[in-house]
Structure formats: structure tokens, C-alpha cells
Image 1 (cartoon, rainbow, N blue to C red):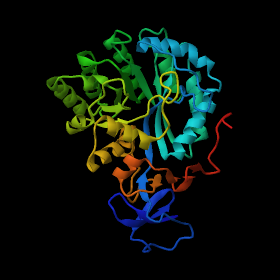
Image 2: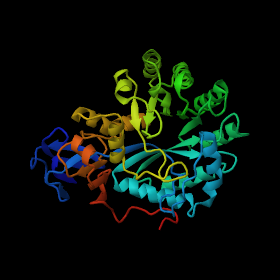
Image 3: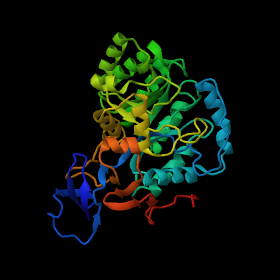
Image 4: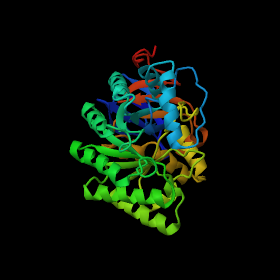
Length: 401
């Protein structure tokens, strides 16, 4: 395949040659070898495909009738409410997850990390559902799965054994939740999580909502354990609200340790909570990446499965106005997230996987500001979507039709 007359982010036009799912050449327009399969982009901006760094495919109500949101005053109350409400959703997990994945692909996402609940109520049922969905869509999107003990690790009877079983069954990472704020046992929870990670050789991605010094001390403990086990680059903390609440001295000390440990921080920029300062964190060497978190579920009635929109939300929340800042926001949903998920191969360069998105605008900054429709989405050099519509051979998934 050749993509002709593509506008590259650097501002010039080029032809992109693709073979075997990879970018094999980038040439001036018309200078490449003849091809029977040419798509003329006519100056549309060509971008790397998006990477969704944090989502909950087993929770979404996408494709099902909307359930009214249930108010809750704390994380613990929200979890208790969801454990009841999740059994009232009209469609099975496979159908809802598949419907959302199709939307993600249409919007240009070709890689994601999903957390999946593991507890005594659902045991491994949600994981089994997502493993089946992952297999259905394996040719069109890469899916990592985090075994997420949302109901606790030390306070949920049998949780460590369930988490070990989830890792053995195919989960890619071990998750956690507020070691102090939820379990009330920082050492106990982290001993279990990092012990399982070390034994299985898999990474860690921990939800951390605790703020202030309580949250910062847990971030430093996570970083210390990461270094001690030689797991640099294999650990992420999702949300890390504490980073947005610290004094400059404590922030600098915490950020320095996170950078040394190469512990990545996911931000979805919830409107009601402090958020990690993107520019200040990056300036200190901390890897920041983007995720949508909850999409139309018991936690939030919002979300649209569009990572370009998420990049704009992050830019707005952090007052990122310059073109350079807007390009950074875009990178959080593309290059930075791809690096955090490991084995990054996406980009506009020879040898990269041809997971690409075309939009009709003049620059990356314009794309973040305008969030235009996706004119073309390629997955491994194959057309996945055009003008907002999915290719006919994209699967529906179990019961999603």
C-alpha cells in the first residue's frame, strides 16, 4: 500500500509506503515505487494511532441502556454500590466491551490497557470475558489486561489467590488500589502485589487516589520497591492525585524518586480531583501518559472512546495553550502511552508498525484543538475505518451484533 500526499507533522508532504504491516519508506510525493494499492490523502494530516492507557472494559455500559448514576461519598461507597449495580446492566460484558472497542478503533485507537475486576463476587468471570473479547479483536487492536482487586487485597478474603489465578489465566499485569486508604495496610498490600509480580515476571499498575503526604509516601514506597526488584519501567500508578496536592519540596523529592524508578503516572484528568501536574512532572523526568478511565459506567456517565478528545481535555485542564504544549498533550495519548505499555513500535518512521490515523487539519496542535473526524484509520497497513465508519471485516464480538 502507498499513502500518497500525506501531510506529516513536520509540515511537509510525503508518500508512505507500507508492506507486511510496516512502514517501509517515506518518500517525496510521487518518488516511490509503483503500487497497485494507493490511497491519496490529498494533504490530510497523518498521525500515529492512539494508545488508550487506562480503561475498564468490563465496567462500561456502552451499547446498553443507560443506568442513572448513583451518588456515593467515597471510593469505598462507590465500590459497594457498583458491586450491586453491575449485575443489573442489560447486556453481557462481551457485548458491551466489543461495542466500545469498535468505537475506539473507529476513533483511531489500536492499543489499550484495560483493568478488570477480580473479587469474590465475580472471581475470574470478568477476566474470562475480556480474554474472549481480546481474542476476537486480536487482529485489529492490542489489548493488555490488568487484574484489578478493586474490593481490596488484604481486606478481601482470598484476593491474593484470585490475583495469582488471574495472572496464570492470562492477565498481563497485577493491579492494586489505595494500599493505605482502602486496605489500611501499605506494607501488606504491596508485599502481595510485588511478590506476585516478581513470581510471575509481570508488571504492576496500581490505582492510587490517596492525596497529600499519605499518597506521596505510597508513591515513594512503590518507587523504592520497583528499584529494589529491578522493575524499572514495568510499574505504573494510575491517577496519583497526591502529586497535585504537595508542597514544592515534597513534590520534588517524590518526583525524583519516581523518575529514578521509571514509575509511570497515568492521568485521565477527572474534573473533580487534583491531578498530577503534567509539565512539572515531565520536567523532573516522570513519564506521564493518558487514559480515559471510566466510560459510561457506574463510576461516570461520561466518556466517548476518543483519545484525541482525551488529549484535549488534558490540555484544557493544564492550561496547555502553545503549539508545543498541545503536541505534548497529543504525545501522552500516543508515543508516551505506547512506551509505557512496552515494546513501542508505533510512529511515523521506517520500520514502525503501520497503525496510522489521518485527519483533515494543518498540524498536531490543530488536531488537538479541533478534534476532527478520523478520515482514515490503518491497523498494520489494513484499513480499519474510513470517514468514521468501520471496515466491513471488523468483527462484532460475542453477542455485540
